[in-house]
Length: 70
Image 1 (cartoon, rainbow, N blue to C red):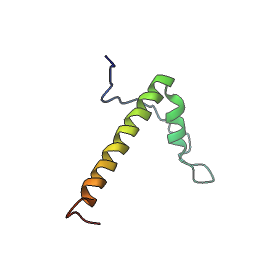
Image 2: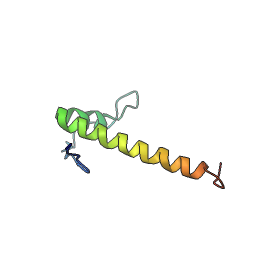
Image 3: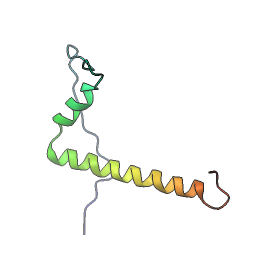
Image 4: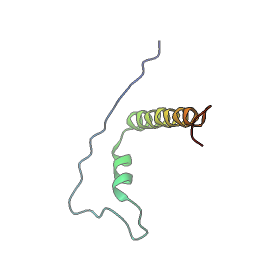
């Protein structure tokens, strides 16, 4: 039987001296956060994002269904 991780939250320590954005407007905190994760943590994050996208797609289908808004 496949074991599914339902919720996982990675911890990140942010240093006060580092800039949050680079000169192009890229959010460096997100890049640092991703680089701080292990490969397993990255996989868990990707799986959670995929589940959340599927939930949103299902909700959108329900809303567009018979009698729903367009």
